Image 1 (cartoon, one colour):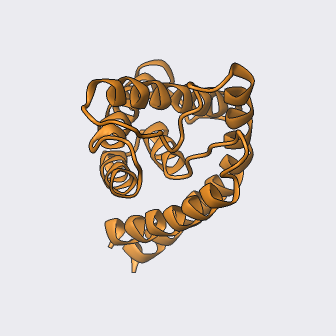
Image 2 (cartoon, helix red, strand yellow):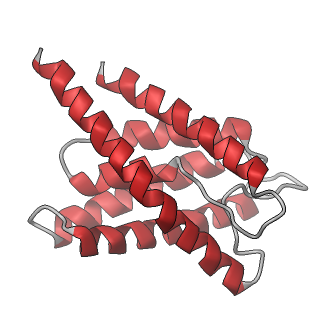
Amino acid sequence: MKYFIYTILIVVLLSINMEAARLFFYTPVRVNLLVLPVIFSAVEKRDRSFLFLAFVSGLFLDFYGSAPFGTYLFSFILGASLLNWAAQAFWVHTLSFKPLALFTASALVLIEVLAMVLSAILPRAHFMLFASSFSQEFWRFILSLMFGFLVAAPVYFLWRFTERLIIKLETK
């Protein structure tokens, strides 16, 4: 049941993500909503459900994106695994707002860098990464990162709601 609810969450965020891509097509802002639940799940250190979220989110973005197949899948799994390892190794208590914001920013940058590296390695011509802003100027990357933080709060509350729903359904 837990993974079914995660899949529904990913599909809802994917539909919002695709509409946001259409709305912000002519602006320098690029945001990826599917990476945020992966980051939140990897930081929580409870179980390995972040791998399921990373796999399904990356797979959906690979199907709907124009990057070479596997770019998002591998970058999400590798980035989430590194983030989970760092959260387990450096923080023994539950994360407060400041470390969560630090982990979110570092993971957003790390996953975009991994997607850029993988898209350069994997063979495919004439594509543009959905969430990548590194090919543009630096201020556009900063603007996209700030917009990612702006949408991280509603996605975090949606993530918390999903987690409470899963706990409620598992206890019944």
